[in-house]
Image (cartoon, rainbow, N blue to C red; front, side, top):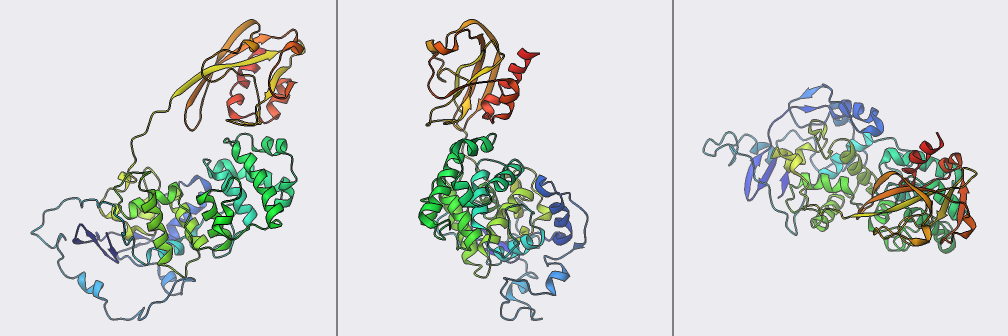
Length: 461
């Protein structure tokens, strides 16, 4: 597929876009931006125009970062404008072709991608209505590398709304990479508790120490060097490179995948379509040499988070609607195409609530490897249903069950209570401790063990 201003070629056949009213994006998206992090901007009325032009206040001023093409503003009609008056094959004026939904095209290597103006249209919109997030700099300005890195690590598998208070607490306690490098791991994991995927918290500390030791506290402006830092993979390196250093790279996350599969009507299912999406996303940046790569990366993210949403996309507010093949075909929600999900297996086990005569409960710091490594929690059996004889105790009482979902499996744990009369005789791996309920609530337990606390509180009532 190759897109040209106001027309689309599908399987060798040219068809014009539908002429629809375009809402003043500057006015309407301001409402969307004021919704902030919820991303549920209302569809206002705004000023309706009958052409695909930008608002007059945008037309009258040159947009920073946009190249003014030769002859721009010339009163002569361009070839594409002249074609609008002709009946093209498949158009409404061509009565010989029956009305039907345009077929979606199949993805193929070497696809030229969106038209050259797609990147500038998207970043122009971002400059006007970008979300205000605590780790962001103003459009067109490189971000602080430490803050970008910290936010990107936290945002892995976690929503913006959840991350903001954690990010602010981290930055208040460890304002620079030097401060974080000097931190104790237990303090970092305590502040991380609730974000999940605790290996990220441990890698955060390892990464800070490496940046200080190997780079004198200055993050390297190189994608390969960034990926050598613990916890930084290709996506995070690309995000830091684009936003903090202006490197010519596009980080591709779920938002970018959704936007590009709709813009280009990619039928190949995810995740196999990822290489093609990366190629097409990079082609957008390559076709827009005057666009700041950090702005384009965040424009993709904001568009996917607030307008081009997974369900009920707000196409009437979309600043790149005229570039979108899925919208032209009337089927934006059919993209992205997803491969059938593989059902996650379910594992089972017991979690033990040991209570001593002083009303305190036993916790054990888990081993340094595996899930929840290094985190405090209650003793458990293995998660394969096999009982551990070391944890046998008197007068067992089943308090209930807790359920938790990890990336690759679901877990069901039976919560078993028992009294411990001789705690010194118990032999458990890891650091042990006894805490009352108030202390347990403040110690930063992982979410799995936080789900046990309501059952413990019932004991105390």
